[in-house]
Image 1 (spheres, rainbow over the protein chains, first blue to last red):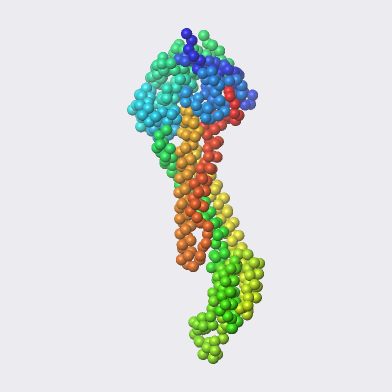
Image 2 (image 1 turned 120 degrees about the vertical axis):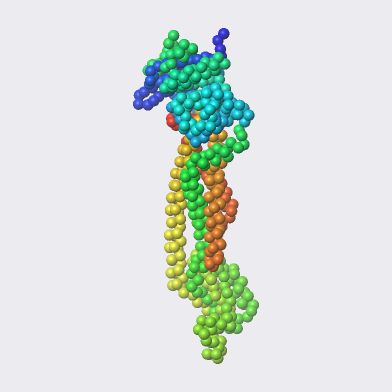
Length: 221
Length: 295
């Protein structure tokens, strides 16, 4: 039996200016599905992920979450949509000058969790991404791999139904990649829908693979 | 949301940008101090100038046979005139005593009688309305008890001119300082907001509503508005006390609420406007989002 459609993009596009344009893209993502977008650098993968979480405006098409249009024009409505999803953008730096635990606590407050729930989730999330020992560390002192795992912990706070991950495994040591990979598999088995852009061939075996080239998206198999 | 979250985050912003916060507090303090000085200047220019230019004499010489009832009427008339700060009755005995103090000789012994008539020394409001002052002086000169009015119009013109010039220069300097301070305040505030931007972006991506992101910054704005305003008010009141000590009566509309209420509202209002752009840039990538539409 097919699972419920969580996210549906119908003809989303983006105008980069100076004649460059991401042509209209459509896709659907179901509960518990892993969708891997594969393609060379500059194909438009990151732009697509940003369009899907309302970070970029699409001059065309519609974005639907559980069948309802996402109103990206209103920060309040966009915030309500974002509380149900998790985003990882590796290129975006984390706030510094506070401990990782305090940052995670702030993130969980943003998700509307109570004080007790935050305390429990902080411990669980840091353990889940293997950063329990670094709970008091300032994000400025974390290594590249630790930062990526910290970003994943932030995205996982509040049990999102959908994860949108932009190159979560690139430039990471094999050991860290394995940890994150295992975590994503576990999340998927618990019903979380995951859309990610990656070059990692093992992930392609686990879910549906879409190939993106020159902004065009097509089923790879 | 925990009740301690907002003040704790506000303190964190403050701790993260100590130099900027100090700069902002100084700029705001200076801003409110200048505002207090403008209010002082506006409210007490008359009494201040009268105090500074005491040498401008205006005297009413009275008839020797003035009746007490006429004297009382004259006193009431002087009290009712807006451009006369006060009038002091000088009896012939007071005048003789002043002469004795000044020259060391008793005029009664020298001339065989007291030559001084009864007079009224007037203190004029020099910063006030000059034509009205002259009109009121003329009015006093025609009172039944008054034999003669003496004042130097030339000296009055000179003092009034200098006073106008001085007030204009001071006002211009204060306004210039106010503009400079506002620019400094704006720069420091923008820089403090930038220091908080990574948090704003993270929270926006995690789905925190804009109102929640704003709260710590708004609380900080109230604190950063009130503390320097209180300090500026205290300094200005101390200045008023100091001036009174050396005989310069400063009468100014320096009320606590006149300063504190705008101070409590000013910074959050400025902050609210500044946040708009930063918040939008936090919710959308690079502030590229311009239209409001469903995608």
